[in-house]
Amino acid sequence: MQFSPKVESITPSSTLAITAKAKELREQGHDVIGLGAGEPDFNTPDYIIEASYQSMREGHTKYTPAAGLPALKQAVAEKLKRDNDLSYRTDEIIVSTGAKHALSSVFQTILQDDDEVIIITPYWVSYPEQVKIAGGKPVFVEGYEQNGFKAEASQIEQAVTDKTKAVIINSPSNPTGMTYSAEELREIGDVCLKYNILIISDEIYEKLLYDGAEHVSIAQLSPELKEQTLLVNGVSKSHSMTGWRIGYTAGNKEIIKKMSNLASHTTSNPAVMAQYGAIAAYEKDDGSVEKMRAAFEERLNKVFDRLNSISGFSCQKPQGAFYLFPNVKQAVDASPYETTDEWVTALLEKAKVAVVPGSGFGAPDNIRLSYATSLDQFEEALNRIEQFTASRG
Ligand code: PLP
Image (cartoon, rainbow, N blue to C red; front, side, top):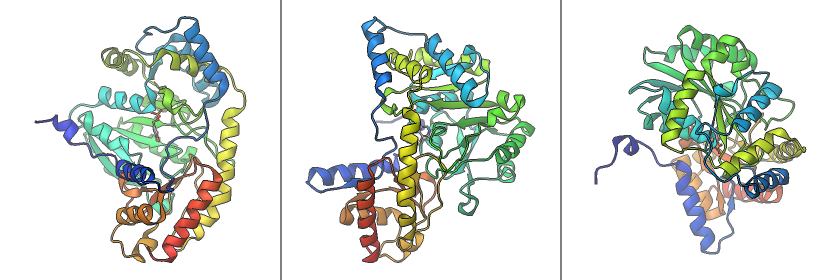
C-alpha cells in the first residue's frame, strides 16, 4: 500500500525502540529501571480530580466549543496575567488536546509547503516531525553544549532565508533543562522582528525551575514580541496531568481563529471533563505544584554530582524540567560500542537501565535521564551505570 508521503517522512520516535525493549525485558522477569519517563511520577492533585468528577456529576459531559470552554479560556487568561504579566483576551486563546496537539495545530495553521521552521538542537523529538507533517521544513541551528545548549541570535539570523516562517523556543528545555535569560530572548526576538518571523514559545516546563531560576516568556518583553509570539503551555507537567491532555496557545487573534476552524474539523474539542479539571487547576492553588517542584529539585541536588562523577560522563546542571542530559562520548569511546545508541542498548540489556539516546534529540553524544522517578530507583540506576562503565560495557 502507498502511504501519505508526509506520514512516510516521519522518523519513528527514538525512544520507542528502547521503551519496547525495556518492556520486553520486564515481561521476561528482569528488574529494569526506566529513566525514560517524560512525565511527573506524582498523581494529579486531588482537588483537580474532584472538580472534574463533580463537573460530570453535574451533567457536563457534552461537546464544548472547538476552542475550549469559555471558562477555561478565562482561567488561562488569568493565569497568563498572574504568572507572566501578559494580557490576552479569550479570543486570543485556544485550548487543545495537550501542548503537543497545540503545537501541531500551530504548524498546520501557519505553514505553507516548504516553509522553514528554525529548530535549535538539542530539540524535543516531536518538533521536526510535526513541522514535516504540516508540509514544512525543519532547519536546525546548533545549541552548542559549551553555550548551555542554547543558540545565539546571530546563529538564528544566519539560518534565516526568504522561506523562514517561524522559530521555536523551548525554555526550560526538554531535553537539556536549560533556560534562556531575558537578554538572550530579547536578542533572538530582535532577529524575529527584523525578518518578520513568528516565534513559537513552548513553555510547558515553566513551573519546573530550580536554584532560583526564573521563567521569562519572550512574549513578555515587548508588545511587538507579544504580537509575534504564539505562546504554548498546558497543565501536563505543572500539575502532573499528562493523561488529561489539556494544552493551549495564546497569540494573534486571526491565527487562533484559524486554529479553531481546524479543531472544529479534527478534534471538535478537548475532553470536557479534562477541561473542567484544568479550570480547577488554574483557579486554585493548594501548594501541590510547588511541592512537586521542590521534590524534583531535591532529587536533582541529590543525584547530580554523582552522575557527573561517573567515568566518561560530563553533565551541565539543568535549571529546569526533570531531565539530565550528560555528554557520554568518552564513556562510549572507552567501550566496545560504536555509537551512543548501541551503548544505550547494551546498558539496557546488561545493566537493565533504560535511558534515552540523544540521537533523537539531535545530540548523538548525549543521553537523557529523567529524574521523574523515586530517589531510590535513580540511585540504584546510578550504581548500575557506574558498574557498567567501570567494566567498559
Ligand atoms: N513540549 C515539550 C518540550 C514536551 O517535553 C512535551 C511533552 O513531553 C510537550 C510539549 C507536550 O506536552 P503535552 O503532554 O501537554 O502534550
